Structures are given as C-alpha cells and as structure tokens.
Length: 433
Image (cartoon, rainbow, N blue to C red; front, side, top):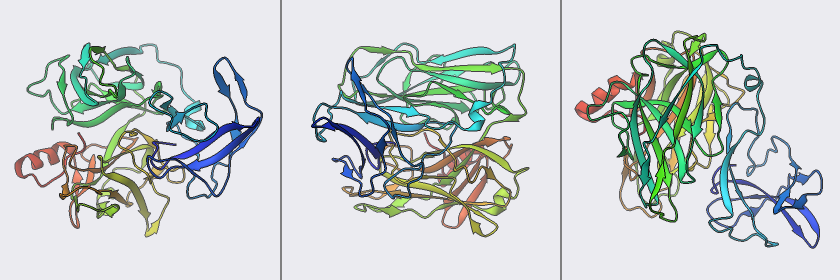
C-alpha cells in the first residue's frame, strides 16, 4: 500500500497453468523482494476474459510481519498502487501498465451512519479556469475563490473533480484575508502558498470520489478565515504533453443547518530543521507539543484523520502520544514516506481522542544521500518540512499550531500570529505551502 518505496505488494500470477498469490515488498524503486513470511492466498481461481483478470485473495489484517501493512477500519482511503503485465515473472511494468488509486479496504461504523441531506443543501464548485497545463514534468498551479459568506455554513461533503489524467492531487487552503494581488479565477504558479493562505481545507488524490464529514461535524465556511480560499493543483506530465486544457477542482456541499461541531485542524511538527548532507537516515529532533499547551484546550478532541507532510528528502514521519507518563499507540506513522502520496490517513483506532494534558512528539527522518549542502526548513523543494495536520472536532479558537520553533522551545498559538512573527524576524515556522 502506498508508493513503490516501502510498499507491501501482492502478486497474483499464472505459471504453467497454476495460479498463485505471493507476498512481496519493495524498499525502493527496485524489483520487489519475496517476503520470507508468505501471508496471501487465493480464495478461488481467477477469472480471465474480455482483456481482464479478476481475483479475490485473503490475508490476516495484522500479520505481525515487518514488511506487511496493517489493515484497519477507516473512514478515509489508503493510497494504493497497481501494475500488470503478461510475463510469467516480475519485470518492469513500463509507464502505461501502472497506476494508483485510493481504496477503502474496510469501512468503519462512522462511515456507515450518515443523516439524510438537509433540505437547503447547496453546492458550489471551485475550479481552475481552463488553464493550459505547462509541458513540464511537475507543475503547481493556483487560483483564488470567494465562498458563500452571508452567514456561517457547514460543508458536509465534497467531491474532487479531476478533468484530466495529469492531475496528481488537489488542495484548498483557507486564507486569513483576501491576498492583495489575488483576483477570482486567476491562475499562477504556486509551488509555495503565500502567507495569507495557510489553513488546510479540502484535499483530493486519485481514487477518491466523495469525502464525507462525520455525522456530528462539518467544515465551516463563511467565517473570517473560511471565506477566501486558494485552490492548488499539482499536475504530473511525464510525457511533457503540450496544449492540454484543464478545469479541475472541487464541488462543495454546504448547508445553513449547522451540525453540532466545527471541524478544526491542529498543526504539529517543527520548523527547527537542519539536515546534514550525505546521510541516508537522519532523524531530526522531534517537534514537541507539550502538555502545557494541550492542558489549555477547552475540551478533549475527537480525532478524524492525520495528514503528514515533508518534502523530497522525507523518509519517515510519526507522531507519538504520551498520556499521563505512558506512551500510547501513535496517532500516525508513515514508515516509508512518499511526497507523491500525501493526503489524509486515519488515526490509529486505539487512540481516537486527544486529551487535555497529552504530549505529542512528531519526528521526521530524512535521506540526503547525494546532497552536498545542509538542508534547512523552507517552502522550496530544496528545503524541508516536518508537519502533521490533525483534523478533529470540536474546533478550537486561538490554538491551531503547536510546533517546535527551536531546541526545547514550542509555540502554542494560531497560524496567523506565527506568520506575522515569522515575517518580522524569520525564526518561526509556517505550515506547508
């Protein structure tokens, strides 16, 4: 599950008329290795016809195998890769016989109980304005939009609307105010977001169709920091095709019938990053959100998902949870981080709550093999980040950022305040662009 690097792989093949299901894994972009512990088996003979092969296979949800991923009930989907070929042994699949998708392997109870749509449910679409995708391998394009703001609304679900095969992923960021140079429907290059638009809102990756809010919560719009939005689309153009026009974006479903809770985002991590070159596995000092911060929360928080973010040298990231002196199950752990497979992941079902007085430690590991300069914190691709976005309810006011700013020093404040502080002296971190 996930990208090729660190993937847990099932291979179904036919050799001399016999079908088999084999357990493989990949540690890098290389030929997968056969797992010494074989856990997959076919439940029936695959069906072949009409240019396709259909099979069913089974495995324990948790095999206790280092190279296997754990399957768990989740409202959100898992990044999954696939490839096929006609050879009887593993070989490179090429650029056309492969792909990726988001798959919800097991539905949780929370995903099964959704109320009927409210009578006043409306939709709004935020899209790119028929832009021509540059003939570059990687492009980030942005546009601005103003959402309904006559009153406060709740978005209760949203759809990703990819219009071309070149869309790698899409994000919408809430802006604290209307950026001075912005206009509705504008289009501009945006590998980094500006300081006005830092609040993570909605996200889409391949395979996702509709994302539902929990039945008791909604994403607020129409408020001071949820009226102006920036849409960012990452395009992947491996063949450097020219002249492709795109209008991808989101459809938001919103209502004035507010649910009991607003959904909020708490940013964890650190901006104190200094990574030496030529190191295949450098563990940066953790960003600590101390109990002195979480003790000020107005209430315990119900966690929805975690969104972990690093840049290109990111190797692994985890957020540990310490409660009353005892380490609990981690909120999230990406042991093989891949920048191209970001998005939301469910928190560990053993730790569904963040409680007042908890301590959180977000640790990032990087691989700078081949680099010759120190890598610092920053927005550019040659810089690095270490953030974990916790989506939760009920939303808090006054605290959406609990990150390390230097050794032994953390901040417990709002993104806007830290952005202003950073603009004045350049020492405090900003969330990802």
